[in-house]
Length: 616
Image 1 (cartoon, one colour):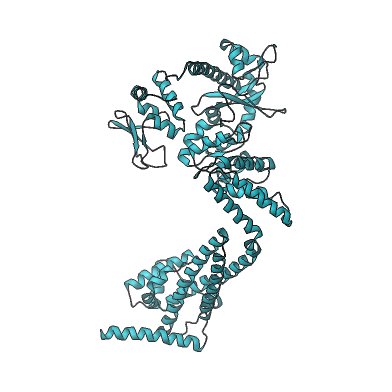
Image 2: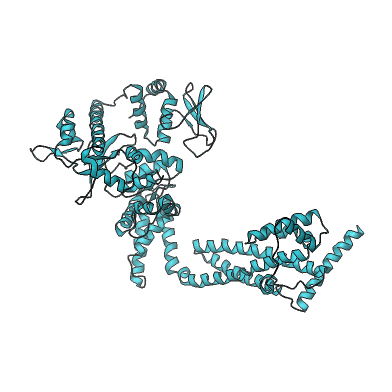
């Protein structure tokens, strides 16, 4: 339905922007404006301003800007028409109806909202009454405090066939039946749908009660009972807690989908308010669309049992045909037999955040689900797997996404069954061996620093390099900083001076060294030879550190790209690492003529530089 510019201008003029925003954001007066911490991004000092005269808000931190309608669609996630209707209701004006039938439907719905709101209040009253004692005990057992009970509007339905019907009799039986609160079979007297259950209201994105969910308190089936579909309630398009989760998700940058009401409430108890749940059905395409209006990649955190994993896979399959570039799903995989309520109950938000922080991508979840269905040793099964993966990719309606999913499925298949799968162990062992070699780095680095105590002049020749060495010991880092500062300030400082400075700053060097561990090369030489040897060792340490980082980067590329080019590059890197390590190891101990010649070369170079300086 289209609305005229004149109507929208009239609507904006009838409402006060600070009043609309002030319902959910704490505003502070700032001259003729209001200021607050921005609801669209996390900040500690206010940069969000509201101007009633001009009718717009603006954040100088994230550039969020708009009017009242824009605020409701962006901050609360309301569809445009819902935002307009909410503002119109507050302003006391009617939204133009597109046709008489539409106007009639709106009028009927308006009266039905009164019915559901009245029922919600009555259920809340029963929870605090005499008959609600068992329900209150259950609520406390679940660890829900009064604040949380009020936030979700939790109530209680007495075990009676007619108490709700009597309490809301003024609305008429027809409306109670139409909202699903009463059940009528044939021409018999209607009776209460919810009996002997904890009641949890289901709200739309505007916070209006549209239906109810009831959980059995003792033994009995069904464990959960929802309202039927009504003019207000379409369960395939509704998400439980969407009214609270929408603004929370825009602040946190994530939306979490769990299986049930109690999972949502448990996460809220742990301070995670951006969680929603479908209502007794698999996650639908319409519900995904609602989630994608909030974030690009909602996280599905279903139970860790087979049913929960099956539901996750089913949601992934339903997502493929409606995916668009930039929109996807991610999956937080919980341990077997655990649900979010269990995890949070055991350790609060700290227990579940690691799962939420490292969700699996959609492509991996779908691939693993198909892989689990085959006998890996059977070539016919492997061929069938490739066909099924190809069919999954074809279900993407976006042709580019279809091609990328096909490419990703193929890559994952060859990780398991191609050259990469075959050689993964070999490559992994090679990388492990290389890393074991690189670990000699720290022992040599420690020894080099101790050598600088003996020959401080080394620092003047290798100041930049010694600062690049990554010591794994915080004390050694402090020693390094102190002697660098000291020698830079006093170029002719001797070893006893270095020790005195360290001791004066209460950073005493070890009184005893393990010669076989801490001094990996001989220092029983002249200052000139010792300085030359230390300079050479420090240079090798810097080269080795760069090599280690390069190995990490290449290893990551090989894991994520099955191309032969990366594999060949890894093999070359391994060879280079081994060659460098061999050179470094040759420096660990005095080795006769080889070291002597290298020392002479270093000394010759230094002498030449000194002579050149003297001549200049």
